[in-house]
Amino acid sequence: MHMPSDSRPSAPPVISSTPSTSLAIVIAAMLLLLAIPALRPFLPVDETRYLSVAWEMRLSGDPFHLTMNGAPYSHKPPLLFWLINLIWSFTGPSAYAARLVGPLAAIAVIGLTGLLAHRIAPADRGLPLAAMAVLAGTTGFLLYGGATMFDALLTIWVLLGIGAIWRVGQGQRGAGPWLVLGLAFGFGVLTKGPVIFLHLIPVLLTVRLWGVTPPTLRDAIRGLAVALGIGLLLVAIWLVPLVLGADASFLRELLWDQSADRMAGNMGHGRPVWYLAAVLPALIFPFGWSFAIWRGIPAAVRADGAGRMLAIWAVSAFVLFSLIGGKQLHYLLPELPAFAILAGRALPAGQRSIVLAFLLPLIFALVALAASFGLVPVKGMEGAIGPLWVLLLGTLAFLALAAAAFRLPLPTGHAIAGIGTALVATLILSASGIGDRLDPTPMGERLKSAEAGGLAIWKGDYQAEFNYAGRLTAPLAVFTDPAPLASWLAAHPEGTVIAPILAPPADVEPASVLPFEDRLWGFWPAPTLISPGSAPAD
Image 1 (cartoon, rainbow, N blue to C red):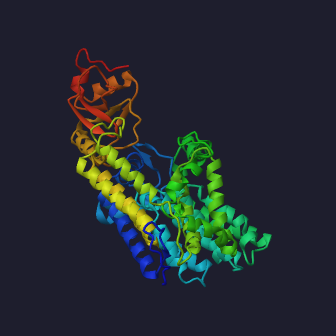
Image 2: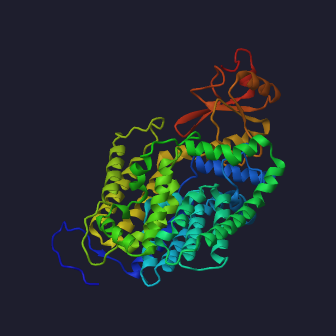
Image 3: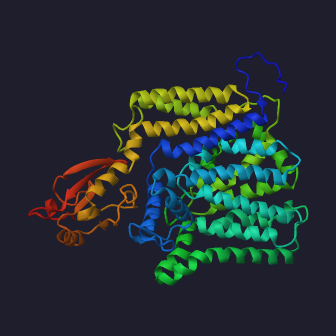
């Protein structure tokens, strides 16, 4: 490719992309996704919770009635936990094996994004690899995709559903696309509940705005009924056995309360309507920080029905989730393929472009440098920042990534910045004291050694952080009232009580202390709490 000559040292990078470059970006991202579970510990509170739910499924042998620390768990459906246990049936309860579910789903998403790009724009032979490279080089996608969470898995079903809806809009008749849409509905609900409909229904409802040969209203209603029926049959595989063995209050919480409360923001993550707009740049870094891409996206949207469909997919989900009370940035992960395909279409070759993507790694470099001088306080983790060599190497690495984003052509420079930022951030977390403080394994192992006598936690908002980490075979008793704790101590004279040392169960020094997250946890053997003068604290 011919590059315009320009000898100015501060000239912005040329936009240049080749299939080999895009393929290298995709391979590098896939390798990083597979490496993330080996590079860092599983983190509280999400990963620890989900691994513990999967662990308790393994212990109970019951794939339908989920529990967390022995109590019924209604916040998520079972598919992620089924997949973890499927892997464990071959590997045993390996943490790395369990944590591969998210990365493998993310790798599948990269491939499916390329397939969707080919389906909606078959004449643009370079688009599938370009879209895959944009998605693979997006830092937020790599960090969330490398985690043991639901969003990458959900994105598979969103892509499957979008592909089916596209076929409907292009005039394909018969039951085929609707059956595929039904599979997407069903597996989506089994992954994360009815939220799958927020990602797919707006695209289906607007088919006349982008479809070449949209179905008649009658055909659409009939097809949607088929899709919903297929989805319901899939969900029934889990729901029917669950209903037969659950009480009415649990079913109400599962089927209605938790969804309604999430929409209202009553289950945590309640945030203002502008929240997603404020944090969206972090999710679409680095390609969303390019003026060249944003200049090209309006034309990519107006070009044809595919562009309009992608825009409706991305924008409708953004608006709907903004209006919902409870929201998190990663709720928009299923829309990243839409952005990636649009960005792939918008990449003009052989032009210079002003970029801002160097700013984020530059900011991270300055933060790491400031932390090396003790200028970045982290409440509750004083002394955990460091060691110094990790912060200094991190500073240099982020500076190199900033230089790559500024000087190298798109998409290479941006992809290096995106993949590199995810890698360096992961390595700093793993090698620093913060990683040690977030690792639940030491606490879990200490609890495992005391499990035979019984375990209890005092005044803790316990989210099963230690059940899988310690491979515990019984739940911890959780107490917030001194009278039940006193009864438990009498029944478990060899037991152990844990609590944050700032909220002790009694005016007695703990036998040992371990750090976890932003606090120190004490371990009190039962005899020290049932001796005279050591009544549980109010």
